[in-house]
Image 1 (cartoon, one colour):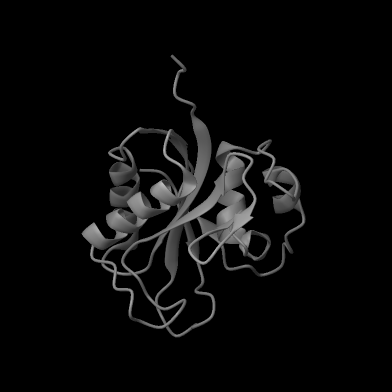
Image 2 (cartoon, helix red, strand yellow):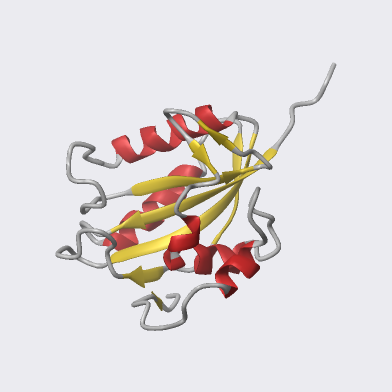
Length: 169
């Protein structure tokens, strides 16, 4: 009998509605309940300027690490269910305001792309609000087809990014 295999997965978490820091914390707590998975760690919280549609409130972002026995599509479905349970509205504009956003950033050593899921997340290199929190919890993680999280974060433009780490309570 073979033992189940565990895969590392990294999830980007964000919110800019209804007390965003509270929503991010609720999202982290909900990750603890994903079947056949364990929440390992999460970063601190960061305030970031919105991307795309700039006329909306700032976001609060974090990154969480998990170990899971789910395949990538099953994990994505679990993340979408958490968003739905927390009131996520999916018929708004792309990059618009949201109560909770859970993005599967990376899953093990998987590089894949289909109509439902692209891994690693296609916009990682553009997102300081992903790379800097991710670097807190997994700087040496090798993002498939790219580099380590720390090396990717080091390539970010340190100019006026609008990213601010929020103090822990």
